[in-house]
Length: 409
Image 1 (cartoon, rainbow, N blue to C red):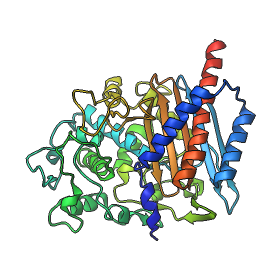
Image 2 (cartoon, one colour; image 1 turned 90 degrees about the vertical axis):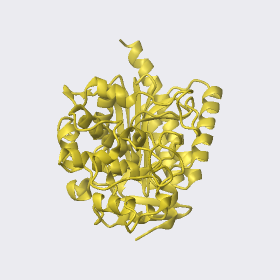
Image 3 (cartoon, rainbow, N blue to C red; image 1 turned 90 degrees about the horizontal axis):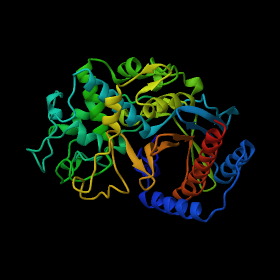
Image 4 (cartoon, helix red, strand yellow; image 1 turned 135 degrees about the vertical axis):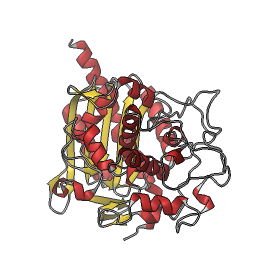
């Protein structure tokens, strides 16, 4: 089944105008509002009221302070028909937050001497990837990780790759080869941008799929198996995986689309380029992973990356003297599979897809983090008003909890 209006919610390609308006509204509200005291009960009311008004079926969230989860809760339903509650243990597809997992796998392969961030990606591939506008310019994993590779999500090829009803029957390598080889069934000059790598930022999912495929090529393992080895097992993320067939579907949330007065259930789906958005996890398990990223690569006595690799991954790449032509580094900057958001005031990643909206962001000091899931697509207006309305209040609650924690020490 294909739902064409889902095109506006493809992972990571959020509506820029809405985000800018939300950020402006957030800053205005913060400046004008008097100090407010939050309680656990008032946060519960916040969720209930906004979910009722918007039609969001289920939500889950956590607040992290100084590398510890200090608050976490679920609201509404993972399955509305069966009245199964949405909890921090509910598994859900997290869309583009998955790109950070691909990034960790890339950095681990770099640690193991299997990859270089600055080598021509064709060094690692069984087929050639050549931008026809600039055939002599090399594409690197560094440019892919900052969305400056010159590779493009060509529509409708990309949207039509969504497979509703289960995992995609099209393999990652087969899809990519057909997309990049001139003789391939999905090839087009429009699969690329008329910009040299590094000179123009255009968010691209397929390029991150290519990065995941390169990890598979150099490690000799599927991305799912390599992720288990270097991330899931060390962090005890037993309910996290890339494919529907490899996670406990009884714990998996249903997905919904709320447009106006209509609420529809969306079949679970997969995509061939799953490294760009295929992770399925819970608020509880994503919190462990996020703490590891914020804590120099370690959680619970286990290390998933060296501190130097985390530093490399999170180091902002754009400067006034060295930036894409269409980027203001003060407002938007990028690490490797890592980015600033909300006008440069937050770090991490977010995701958007059919039936999915997620955020995993920290403040610039990495002392406070907030994760928020919903299993319901909303109109642009309602996404801005209700989902981000909750998120804004959670950040203020997190600031209060941090202050209280500091005062009690």
